[in-house]
Amino acid sequence: MIKIVNAESLQDRTIRLEFSDGTTGDYDLQPLIVRGTEMVKPLEDNAFFQGFFLELGALCWPNGFELSGGGIQRRLREQGKLRPLDQVA
Image (cartoon, rainbow, N blue to C red; front, side, top):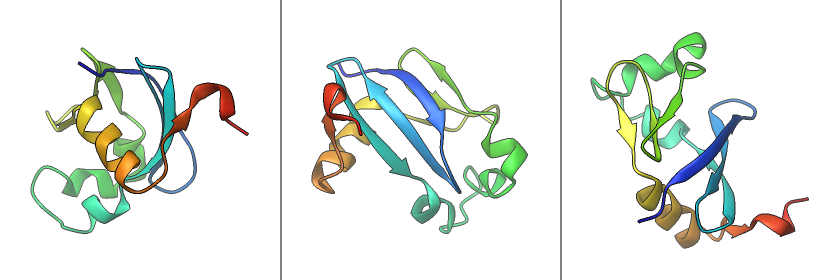
């Protein structure tokens, strides 16, 4: 099971994630936020967005919204945005 082991906020709604298998990628949550669903609507507020934390390898927010490490990693791979941690510029 792939877990997120580190998360760092970049610009806008992008978070740099490191995964338990030694890969990393920058995940842009803006496409998810624009859907405006009940769980992601609070992420429009920058202060709330910045309140993310890791729990059991998932990316989480205080309202109970969470994204699995494996799911995010799969999307980054599909987008060509996943790379080995030792290749970070």
